[in-house]
Image (cartoon, rainbow, N blue to C red; front, side, top):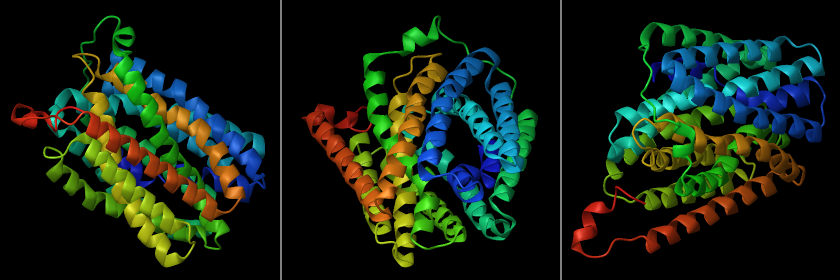
Length: 378
């Protein structure tokens, strides 16, 4: 967890990829959307590579390799003096970006009881969000130096995190079933990954489009930094609610809460007013604690012993698919106006809330004998 926190202190580069290409290099929104979609496409083999390395080399080596590769790509983006160089850096970052995820998530699945995995995943992301608060604040002093300075800071944080991982993480590999990938590909996991992809698209639209939408609304990149900080702080507080409620509420109920809160925050963003942008950031950050942790915990409970890395790799591909879809969808909607962008995302979040509410009703246990199973299965 410390490794991810250190890395996240400088982890604002991802949100400013679009701004680096659009404002610094003069690329059109259409071209930016295409490059970001290619970035997302590259994250899928990156995730698979991370899963393979985790099962063969162990978490420590995988995390170190992934962080070093990210640092190299971020420096290319920062110092690239022309469009081809920066695009090469963006695509290299995509190929490195997801390598550490299977290792991180497999550690949670293998070491935490199922009933506590939602709050543990939420704690992981909330801990990263603690660093995100610092990250968002750092945007303000770094912004006058240009967007490139943000990527230099991001690269430095990746290098520092790699050093922490090499020093503190144990050098072990997990026992894996043979063959792990075929055993992990159950119908239930595939369906859940499809549902998770819809949520991931929403998140990636926010990640890619927020800086551009803030600028379209007439605010400076500094405002984006503060919104990211506010959202991160809200995630910290919401994680405590997840930890308190996860053994009493069904996963479907947690997801309904998260999606309704997210829809409300996005609707506030549609106004473009500064006060509503801040309040919306509070709700958007809080929603992540409910949704991210629960989606991953449900996937993690599908892993048989030794299959955690494989299962989380498969489920994690939802983020790669989303990173391909989100730029095209986001730029097309943003071209119609930031209000249309955020209201469309809010409507999608409400649709997902309705889906989980329906699933919760259909799977509701009946009778006293079923009461104890409410929080352990979807």
